Length: 303
Image (cartoon, rainbow, N blue to C red):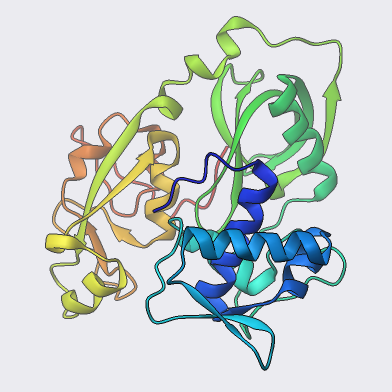
């Protein structure tokens, strides 16, 4: 990888964009750069000259199309995140303004559980500004009003959650964002010391969960390819507060004797004791605590 720290933030962004387009679409033009960043032709020309100076073996100018095209000797300037790459390819590189469109033909399934923007906005502002929010929330026991102190959002693969201190229950819990009906900032209220993220042991505790192909299924090799499991083990690093939800959504058999027969469960948690003391383990399919409590594979949500 190349150190781009000597360049300005704006120029780094343009150089990375050139690198991205070459790597994942095979070609990029001055017009692409001008449209994406609003720079003039002269500035775009300088950026391409700078890129070719940094990585002379990466690209060549096609004199017919006037596009810079990838060469066989290409080596990316930076490590491109797969998640960001897929988002850019399927939704456009930027925020979707000015007619931005997908870069390749694609089809994907979006999350079925989507929070309302008018709820997400005050929640995210409260996280940024350390504020208290009054919400209406629907749980298994019905609808209620809560005052919460949110500090993070998270996604378990299917739904978005907000982690917050719940003043009603006097503890840190997860709320499914889609279940929040209304959210209103409490401008005069200030969070207390015991409502600070630093006091949330379950959020701050990190787990390394060893996942292996399910011993009772016949497709171990395919599973290892699907999940890139060196040595046959995938170590899932996850916060204790989220572990149960993630294991549920990924269909991981967490029973000590890998006893879930459903073929949807292609992974097994080879060390169920890794969930000891984890509150969200109630959602981990098949999990049984050392004290004999049953896991909550039939549970469907957060607080």
